[in-house]
Amino acid sequence: MSRQLALELQLRASTRFSGYVAGPNAELVRQLRSSAVGEGEAFVLCWGASGSGKTHLLQACCHTATEHGRTVAYLSLNDIDALPPAVLEGWEQYDLVCLDDIEQLAGRVDWEEAVFHLYNRVREQGGRLLVSAACAPAQLDIGLADLLSRLSWGVVYPIHALDDEQRREAMQLRARQKGCELPDETAVYLLRRLPRELPALFDTLDRLDEASLAAHRKLTVPFVKSVLESEA
Image (cartoon, rainbow, N blue to C red):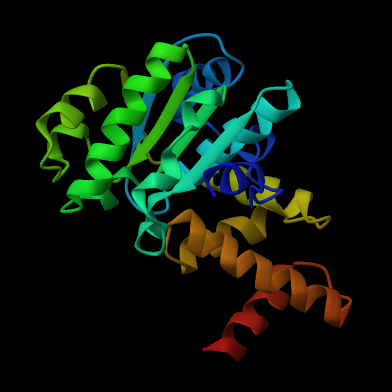
């Protein structure tokens, strides 16, 4: 089961480093790229609030690793209610293991122990283990002290929020990847009107792209304003 889950990855095509605006997180991106190809640190933990890009970064590592011929296992721990801890057995055979949303282990003794033992096995095999969390390791509500200790052993990076200029750049990059153009003035209008969390901005941009295709219109401020008003 673990082998099938690991190999049949459901990675989003857009979650690549080429689609990520690093901004103040350039050193984190450099480190993750290095670890993904078997260089750099053996263990990296990045943490940040919801919408900060943790999943994007870990999935980008998976894409990079597979492009370099490395074997990969990825699991979002948001899914552990539907899985037994034994799913992690044998994962040390993979060159790269990515565990997303490690905070979901809280109160799950069986899973905490399984991840602890996986960490040790990956380390013994010389693999790379990349982990994301919603908060710093010291703030995680994980009961297994040995696991908490392991999570602090490697390199730990906070994911810093982008400023408005970098958010604009991220939105325009997203638009280009979808084959449309987002003018500066339209991006600025959206940033002034909408919540500044990137997932919300991207969701709105996706809807605007669909509306522009249907109406054969460009993403001008008047057109975007009319679409947003129709949704209100």
